[in-house]
Amino acid sequence: TAQSKLSMASSWSDAPPEEARALDVWPLDESNVKLLDAVRPRAWEGPTEAEAAGEYDIIAIGSGAGGLVTAKQAARRGARSALISGHLAGGDCLNVGCVPSKALLHCARAAREARAALAEGFLVAADGTAPKLEVDFDAVMARMRRLRAHIAPADSHEGSAAAGAHVYQGWARFSGPDTVVVNERTLRFKKCVIATGGRAAVPPTPGLAAAPYVTNATLYNLTALPPRMVVLGAGVIGMEMAQAFAAFGSQVTVLARSAVLSKEEPAAREAVVKALEADGVAFVSGVDVKEVQTLRQQPDDPRAFPLLKLVLGGGGGVPAELECEALLVATGRTPNVDGLGLDAAGVAHCGKEGIAIDDLGATSNPRVYAVGDCAAGVPRFTHMSGEMAKLAVQNALFGDGWKVSSLVVPRCCYTEPEVASVGLTRRDAEAAGVAVDTYSSSLEHNDRVILEGQAAGGGIVEIHCSKDTDTIVGATVVAAGAGNIINEVTLAMQAGVGLGAVARVIHPYPTVGEGVMQAGLGYIRRHWAKLN
Image (cartoon, rainbow, N blue to C red; front, side):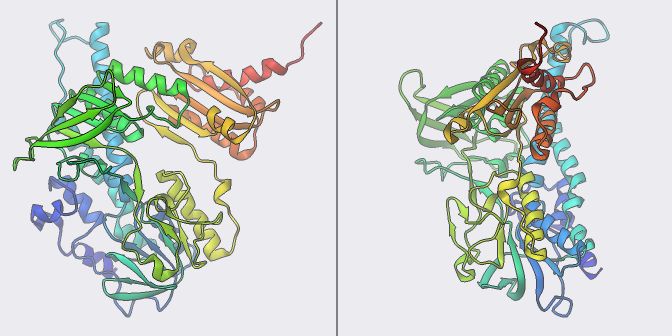
């Protein structure tokens, strides 16, 4: 097509590195050139005036999971569809989130397992001695960039155009209730889906704004391993990267103002803290950062490091200050709603919470929907964005009544062990006044867990059912591969399958997934018939 020819007219291989740095992408090596050629081609001009629709059936603003699913699915279903991509197609997930983080976690796990093999004595050098292992951080990051670039074509502008969507590269702004402006062109729509995502929330700590800190948006540009890293925040991103960088060899300290993984069950939080401490991560709890001092700015050499000092407060046991070469700010997320012209479209919003939507995904303007991290009151996960996009297309274009509240949304923290949850925790149930029975299975006696050398990891399966029934309302799994195991429970919840039926599903032996069956057997044992 004309669009695909335009997209390859000028490759990022011809671009000055500063141009890529402006997009927070570096180094501009072969892998990042391939990435940018796919997700932000330098010469992409989009459809001409003659090619553009006079009125689009649907326009998606934002090219992360929510926008891509909206534009592609609508086009495949016969709609005149457009996608407006402001930054990098693929959004946070591909570029600075799920994809690069899991690539790093794979390498961290490999390093951890290699060290365990050394400790157990079955990994030796050819002469029988125990080799000294070190992580080549540059190779870790090069691998990440290579694999991210390999995945990128699935989210590329060319891929969206091939699905039938018109792709505009630029920043969109509403000019009215049914019009948006991009690159000084006005596009009219019947329906619009806002899918602009979110970004790292940076606290107003004195000195932080002027300091060379990193967030998930810049962390994956590192080419050298920082000797000392401080992680500000104890949520999923903070825990995953703390464990990874500790495995690579950094001295990592986590500053936690509140509980680690505060949304999860206590047993899950304890297992993660125990595992990270075993990997060398230090935790400082109940701490406030009073000030961030920049002792040395980022040198011109990208392989050199700045030097930062954090002045701390919080009472007994909290150090007065900490120095580090890398400060990862992971204190939450904030929606991307600024500069969209939402008021011109009549779309109600709150800067901190995001765009208000009803249970059908629609905003205060019935023509406009919002999905994913930019929407208020919904779980902020890539898989939630994609599912909400399907819902928005169905409701906006086909007049259906799919409800956001009907979605059963699992979540996972990909530490080792992983923590995966769905539905209510015990604390959620108490807050909602929902009486539950909890059926648990400790994985320390699970044969596969023992054989994998993970019996001391605090693994557990907890399943909550409505009181005196087998109706599942929530579950938590703590184990290697918990993100895969939780899908069985999620399916049961969505399909209305009770725990008694789940317990009678034959699981292959030996598997960690048997823990779900064992938890279910707790329900059966409580209710089975007995001989007198």
